[in-house]
Length: 114
Image 1 (tube, rainbow, N blue to C red):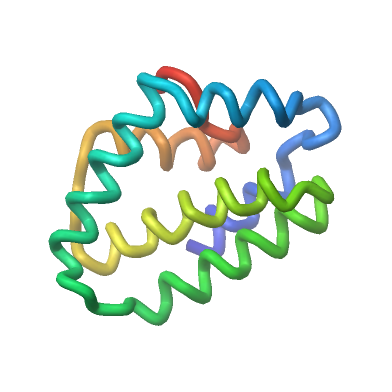
Image 2 (cartoon, rainbow, N blue to C red):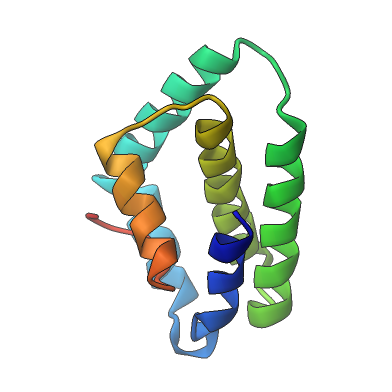
């Protein structure tokens, strides 16, 4: 996960239209897929708190906030990293989630259709 977190430093935040990004995240197809994967992972967790996932999400939040100065952007990306960390801890696999992870591996913030 450290390598994936490191990719957040390679993103050109100054080129990002944050309002457009949020619109693309809060609408389908992105939103429905994100919620579907999130619910599947939460069902597997059964209320358990995975400590490492929380720490990874906090690191992601702070990195993005420092780079972009946008709390909204930092929250979205932090949520992604929380979900990714949970999925790894639970050995959960999903094709859409793989695409989300691939975006971060390529230093691209996922939104819209993946």
